[in-house]
Length: 354
Image 1 (tube, rainbow, N blue to C red):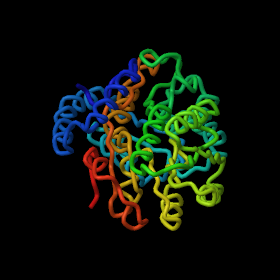
Image 2: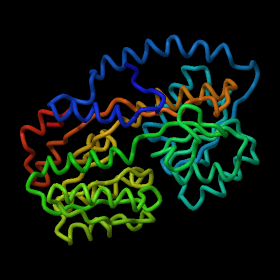
Image 3: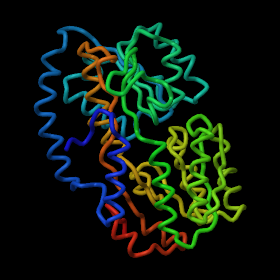
């Protein structure tokens, strides 16, 4: 089974993975060492072709629209793979250094600058960045890394995207619900919880579905929607003040890129929280569930980018989705906030940080 596949039946895959977890299995399926070995073997075959396909003497130009900094681990992983493919910054690759650490309100202006610079590909992270790139150009290839490519209308279909956009769709809406289930299982006495939602990413219909699902388990869900990073800390304070016993940090590029604010605030308030990436639990969060963002950038986005730089049309490059999900439990954080985790829940985790 491949680690990442074209996204045509993600609902069925999610049901199977969630069923496996409910039976006591894990969603990881492979050890990290085996994953690394398989990845190295696969790229030994993939990258030489990419190197041979490059045009001698040509300098490729990569544009970016990112809220995250250039030295974020997922960006570092991507450029390591590009180097393995023979696309080396400072030699035959020029990278837009101004496209990182951007505020959302700068996306439109910078997208226009990238079009004027005639970059070869635009790499866009998050819904707002993708929208800005698509408004700026219908010609320059765009690789999107975002929550729901089809649902947001960024592509015509997942197998055949059409237009000038392809990329990775990370199953955000489906996994927000799964994460809600997990935090309720980790806190079985919970009667009221909160969700921190990015207004750009989380639709009203999806939020209502989460509230209905929580109500079915006898839990009241209070949603706190925000527009800007400055609103994150006050929203978490409001959640705690409302007697919420846990927090579901919904999928969002803005919330991920401001995770330090969230991690620090929930720690000071001793509030159990779950996040969309396993890495966030490794950085000090209580729970993390989902695919690994570093692996997605390294193993999927990098491959798609090389394919487009070699001349493929984005309309013919399938949108991909993750098939491997991990649950990480940070017991150090649980102890620090005074939360006892049920033993049965720990047994289902892919990784427990003691």
